[in-house]
Length: 294
Image 1 (tube, rainbow, N blue to C red):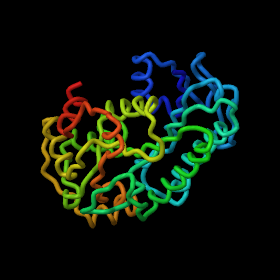
Image 2: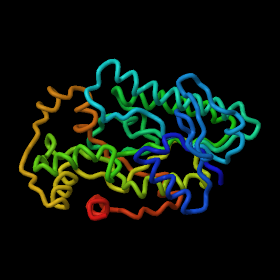
Image 3: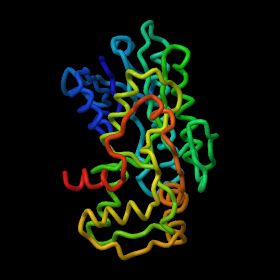
Image 4: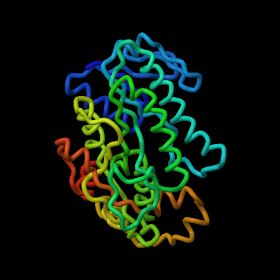
């Protein structure tokens, strides 16, 4: 397949493009700067500008665009960037697909933030939207993707904490390296996770699947946060002596701290498993060991 990828140079995008190319797909990359080679194609998502001929020439588009939620603090201005960077890019792609005479499949990034904080509840794709800033962002993000739904198959893949050397794991790894690994709050809040390898492999799987709509990209079995931070310290041969109180997180990081670190989500990849996808990394310990040891 000819696959057009936005956000191709990012943490997930780099792994995805490598897996696509290793399995025989041709990868084209959307960039905001002058193209450096024939695989790169310039677009301006904030202005809604993209080459319609390019869109018509590919079999699928994978959208990974969006400003990092890990950039702190979440000022009012940055919260606007989190929202608009996702919605503008997604709407630009979805509207181009809707205009195309040969509309490609559209796989658009999304997030488990859709479910909000729901401790003690098993969360599937059928679960209603939760509360909070990220839940509202994801709802708007998916709504933009579904502009294309009358014209092609659209999948909005809701990603959890991606375990790998980058992304949201970077600050955890840096703190642990300097002996500052810590239990975060009570440590009992459930973090939905997926290894970087399986995140990309699941997206590749969705290219040739018949699934549409929301799909949870998380490993089977969310785990307590303390299990993640404890094993990361063990794998890096570092101490894990500290506790970061919930009150301190709320006072110093505010809304972002609550949403990113304290929210509890026991999410199940119901549709992905039913569709026959097989995870390589089924324990968070194994996923951490895989990227720590290389």
